[in-house]
Image (tube, rainbow, N blue to C red; front, side, top):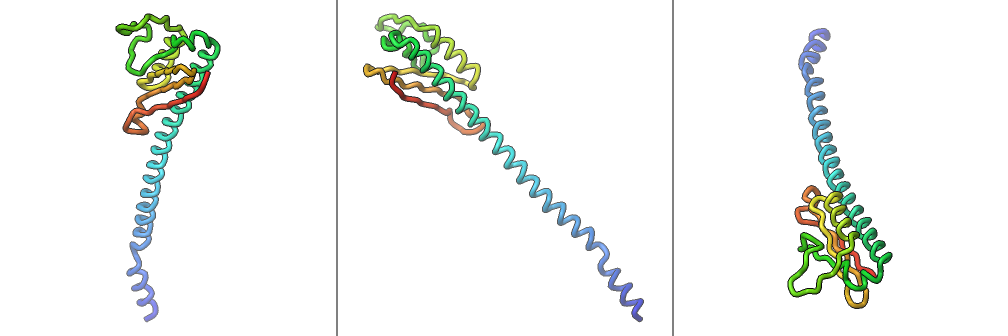
Length: 153
């Protein structure tokens, strides 16, 4: 009689090992999908941080150029707005100011290092300089990003 009972209990448990394996695989796959999502978010954030670091470095680079050429910077020759396409173009009704090659090289470098990179330089009468760098960060954020630095020469 004991032999029949043990055989019956073994037959009732067949397949439970397979169910346990399937549940473990489902839990593992959900965990791996979550890990992949975290990795993707981390890559986006890392790319955005890299762009911000590049913008900061480029702003300090232009500021160093302006400090090396204070007289020209004080006269406003380094001024450039985000809407200007060509820094050497003459505005209507304004006196033509020679744009230093530093600004043109800086703008070219912004375009090559940042996606849709553009920059603006504003110098007021008190030698307060505001450098604005704008780029497209569509991977990390939906809107264009800006880095703004204000200092005195």
